[in-house]
Image (cartoon, rainbow, N blue to C red; front, side, top):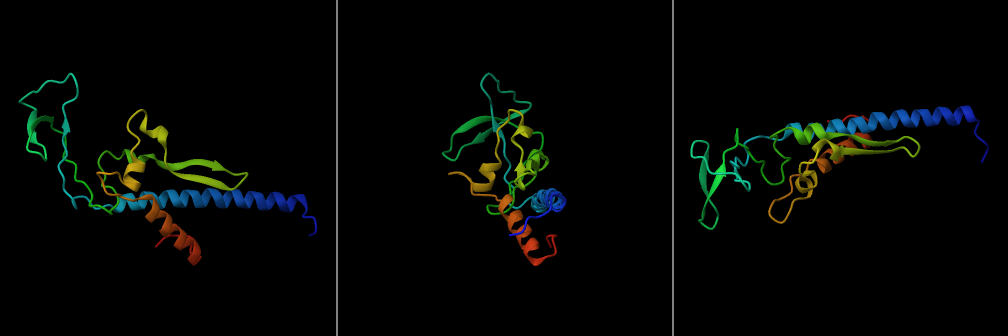
Length: 165
């Protein structure tokens, strides 16, 4: 194989870095789009959180709930109801923390590798729950948002349009 002149190699590397940045931002946009499409109200589960240690029951703001076993327990009312997404649908938007956390987390221009997804730093000591939403838990069915976005993005790249439908 003939030696490639350095200016040509530099130009190819620069083009590769540009393509990497554009594609990684495109994938981030696609994940954002999947989250935006999540329909609110499919499951319509009103979620309240239980009293935390040290909190006392205040009848003006708190109420009692019934567990699946029929036991009463005190709960704090949320400031607004949460409408859960149906199993299999992307997660419904509640606080917006998940959507705001999706970004190009890492960009390695030398190896043309990008890591796109929820940034753990955006959760600042709060529970990092994107993996639980994506893959589910024993008690909660998956509500994938990364895999559908990746599949749509791969189809767009393969079709040559470069933009998801």
